[in-house]
Length: 196
Ligand SMILES: O=P(O)(O)OC[C@H]1O[C@H](OP(=O)(O)OP(=O)(O)O)[C@H](O)[C@@H]1O
Ligand SMILES: O=c1cc[nH]c(=O)[nH]1
Image (tube, rainbow, N blue to C red; front, side, top):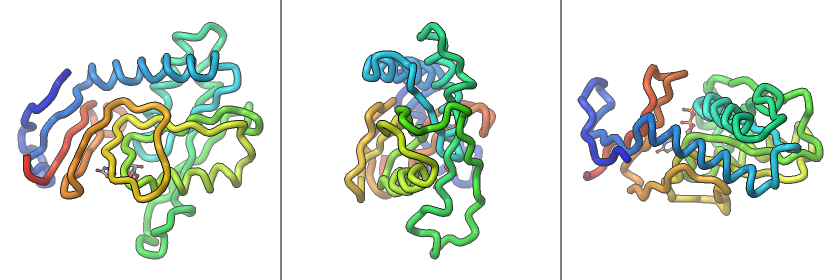
């Protein structure tokens, strides 16, 4: 496990950044979560995996690939999609210029399915609250579960993750940044700011 490694100060925002997960840690966490999802749901027949933009989407694709690798008969592309929550956020009035991401549901739809929402960081829970509203406009899943690569605590709503890559106790002064090769050119999780 990579932990406590200072990050070179290569961006203006990177004040006192500490790497808490490296590429291999992220890969192992996603593989474990894939196994946990299949165990919890007794297989993958009814699964739909929806990533929340931005970084939840590549994570959902990575997870779907692992699910397909573990479970015979599953095809990653048939399971995976994305769910944009922008218009459902409770802070839309304060941030009206957010970029709207893509919503794409696999052909099997979500009605009667087990939808696994995927996001990189779980913090206040407000993004996931918005995701549940967005999902409600698309159909009626049999169940909704949540996979988060990092749970940093500080929930403001009664929301919890079913599958967590890493629980990271943080202070509110800190920020967790998940970097992914698909969006950022490298894969690692860092904590920035706050006293270290
Ligand atoms: O639990 P919450 O307090 O809602 O915080 C978690 C959300 O914050 C980040 O998204 P952000 O809004 O920064 O957008 P991005 O994913 O496009 O960077 C992160 O990707 C989660 O979606
Ligand atoms: O630390 C945080 C809090 C919210 N969203 C993030 O991506 N990181």
